[in-house]
Length: 379
Image (cartoon, rainbow, N blue to C red; front, top):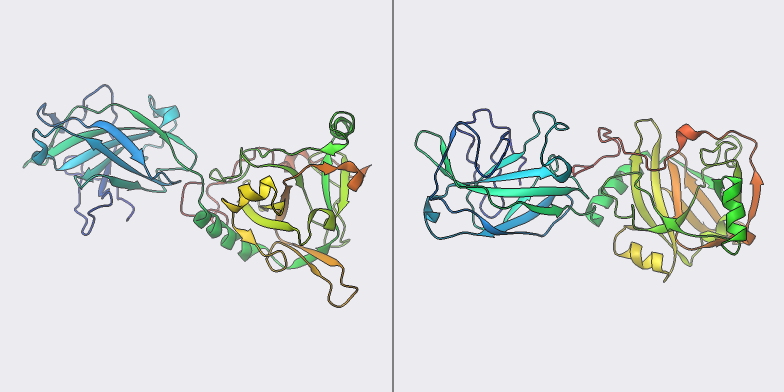
């Protein structure tokens, strides 16, 4: 459905849009605060006879759309020409102090058959709680509206990105990934206390933890997928991991084939930036048949481990047939391994560089204005 236009005349807020029958025809938007049960807009008259929507139901929720329907009494039903839908983020339902003045709180739609679909990436964001209430309205000959009382307020939450949206992010990430560089180890930086705790309390293992809320707001892995984070990027001039890290001065290194091999599935998780020139790609490594693998199969695009633009594992056909590994040069890879990792699989040593806290991505918010890593749905 087409993105609605802003209304310029509050007494005549609609410009009829052809061909909009089953889908909600958001032909105009007007800013109208709702306080109490009836409209406060001076150009809208109250008419008790119009039925008030009852038993509102929200269904088919995606990251940027939902279906809405309700029951109505038969009285004056034939007089209804429009519906007013008051949609607000839950945290702002009593105040618009965080909203830009041009952000709509009321959607004005033709009275089409129910259920109708409300769709709009510029006023619906993924993983966001909203409140919604509805009025029925009858457009008068003078351009004003007679309206019913407001319905009850219903709450709902939009969904995560679907695989369709993630594939759009994937395609954008592929554009800037750059050439592939060879690497041989995955590494994880933390403070000394982290590794001491792993040895003394966790049976010498690094245990999976829930991914934080960094990256795209609609990412289906944030706050849900458990894993151990690794890096694999190397310095261009040395071919080795950098000596600086934002996460700690102690580094665990493990040979790449211990985590990434033909028995591992690879998934694309996210693509984002943090108001800087650096772009990050989140990848998930999941041993085949593991719980993490089952989680990712239902939610994330799978990548061919031998042929993709970010992280590859394939046999060296010109050498001894051992596995060789490559990573993308122009993006920073954040690799999540979904299973516990025994410290005995690698080594822990102190790095010689600095702990650059400013580069940390912990709970980092994605830049919603970046054209390189955003898609046309909620950020």
